[in-house]
Length: 426
Image (cartoon, rainbow, N blue to C red; front, side, top):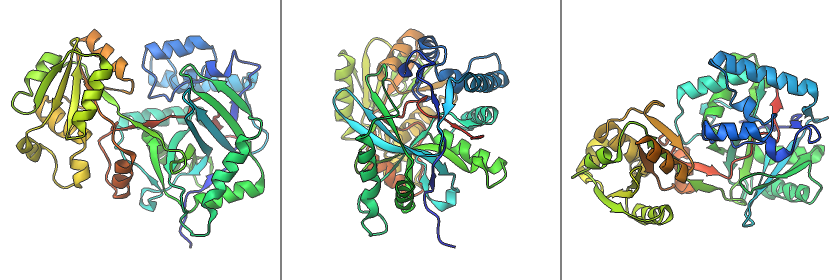
């Protein structure tokens, strides 16, 4: 049997009827794990009664009630025609464009859920079991993939040497010249457009090209782990064999890589700084956030560095004691992993110096830098601000089968949730 590669399948997308909602922008949302709860959740709910957060982040008293509510809401919206299925299966070309002209384009489809030993979809972060269980319960209840995860691949040159590597790019550019299925501008200033690819020859060409590639999970590790769990639970062949993804060729459209910050709920900044005495260099910075982040970037270019906030100032933490690192960082991993800021943060600072358990009761993971600082100042905790890792480091570690500490990176721009869904009964 020939080895299998990435298998991207057309599907009948479920999309909002623009005549039944206030606006397409008002019903979209960032991915479920980027919504800053509860402020962001309530803001999105009030934007439109049909906002997608009512499906991806339902609110009720118990997990069972939340999932049942999401399932009932999805059934009702489909019955009322708020969400309607496209008439034929297709792949979707998806474009995001921000205010400075940066463009990202990719293909949305239903990807065969491969086994880990196939090395086709490479994770670079560990997952938290309780989040996988939560997403699995929601997908079971709704029988739907409510938002695509983000995968990347490197399309230059192809893997087969037959010159076909430009086929997908050509088809994407050709689609982008046509009238889109939808176009909207979201609150963050991003312009979104979506086209369908239904031509059998075009679909076959995209599928042939992608079959020669591996993909890196850029965003959606928990959803990919959920796809795998649900595929194992259901008979095959069947709709659970596939999961909704956006595939982006980063040779053509490089993603932005940002850090994900930590908020330590029960550790005041004064205590965090005091515990570092003699172990790291700590310098107080009485400057605005932007200048403090510039200082962090400069320090990170020379070694491990972090920025603490929460007391009205910033504290630059760098130059760790080499003996401390040797004692606390596991030595059985590649050097690129041992020297990651996220590795040092978790293995050295959280586990050994601050002794903060990695649980939701003690640590929140927040993408927005200013929001992390504001929450720390409001709650009396410590914001630990991180510097991003380069994509090449992430990809190299993933190819070696080495996962980074969870929530180490944030690739973007992330696909907006609510533009196209996949109902498994279609």
